[in-house]
Length: 162
Image (tube, rainbow, N blue to C red; front, side, top):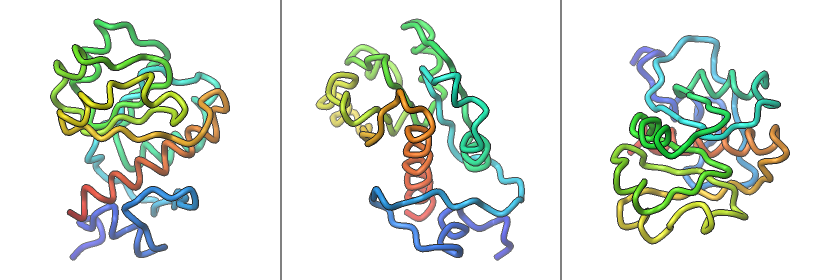
């Protein structure tokens, strides 16, 4: 099998073992400097501009297609959410009406401390949407983005190996 045909998980596991379950000790492994076609779209509904120039964004964009928005209104959410495999929000609540409308997202990433406040967990579970709590404060943009990037690497790895 040609290296370019290998899944993200195989590339990562060639460098270091990667687990499917989230661990606070999991870290982002830089991928080889080849161009890969992103297999997933991640939509940040309300990202911090301070972290826009971070090298973490660049590493993340090598694995997934990233769309970033500083602010998202409800009408914009309905449109933006339809193109996402993974939604990341730190402030915008995702209620029943929104979750019922959006059929594509399979994962939602939110700060752990606001998980039940931002997402109707029971509805998300009924719709088969996994809600991941990120154990970092979104006001500290670099650690939060690093934790989001690690979780996305875990999600991408589990999707390519199942």
